[in-house]
Image (cartoon, rainbow, N blue to C red):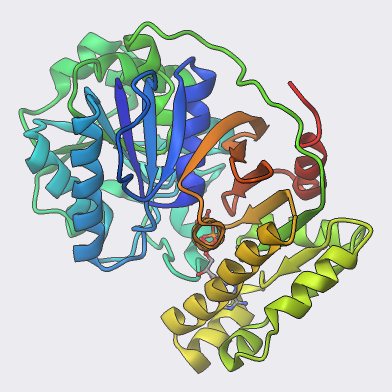
Length: 409
Ligand SMILES: Nc1ncnc2c1ncn2[C@@H]1O[C@H](COP(=O)(O)OP(=O)(O)OP(=O)(O)O)[C@@H](O)[C@H]1O
Ligand SMILES: O=C(O)[C@@H](O)C(=O)CO
């Protein structure tokens, strides 16, 4: 194994797994820290944790355990995969986890860059932009769990970390890998600018031999080439059979996708009140889903005002866990009932759904959208999964993803 990735959520794990697969690495996504050994033929492994919004101590402990497993499999380089919008609560977990991993690996300077230009995420003068807006003015300021209200990543990371946080500008990056390496301090975390894929490939070259780097999937663009890998398209054996869309993301992009899909297929909304009351009968919902001619949509996605009202009434964590609990139970029962194509929208929601599926290892297929691969879960019958980050995919993503799962490549 050459590259080991520790991802702080499940959609982010599949996002970077796709980047590595398209750059030629043989890669699998693992759910939580595996118990056994990895296939020695794997060039890369991505461990999906549900640590982004966990307690700081839990996030640190789980990330260190994942790092130890990856190193034991021979991983020469560790990537801490975080969100391209640097999703984090004020107290962590990016800073504390990065500090712990850096200490465990005696990593020296750690380059940090969440840029993902293909999906409109760029870092310039230490500030994170979502398309043409500062992060703090984008929809991410209303995120239900990790509202991002400061675009200056140096300040955000410095508030969470015990280490020195510095910055290397795009002007230096664009002079090449040698100039970037020369600009790095001896230790600490370094926010590195990147506004285009070429900047990320320079960063990848500069990261050759670095024990630890941190970023979105874009930071992996240039890493496989350091190990002699070259671009390829992942293969896919068609998966047909009943399908369903599960959406717990409240992001702007997902809410648009929900409204578009509701126009062509049956749907049912799960409200926070219903989830908190325990009135939802999962078995009845499964039967309703299986009775539909067209793959139906089950969603809790709601506008920020509705989410805020629910959080005020029930508590942010309680509302989140209640809704995730519904999707966790639903996903497991759907797979047992024979559903074979499952599209999930939202990182935490995907974590819940995958836990419900009792999935431990996923094969990476071709892209459904930038940052979203189709995944194969090997059960009695193969299950095709799409774990879509809230802000990813176009308006017709749901229908297109279900159709793509049925086409071999
Ligand atoms: N109607 C609702 N009211 C309150 N909380 C909700 C509601 N619908 C979903 N949630 C919660 O909001 C959170 C959404 O987070 P999730 O990570 O699934 O989506 P996302 O942040 O848009 O996706 P990503 O992290 O991939 O960008 C989950 O914990 C979910 O349970
Ligand atoms: O980097 C991203 O935006 C996604 O992979 C993600 O982490 C969403 O939660």
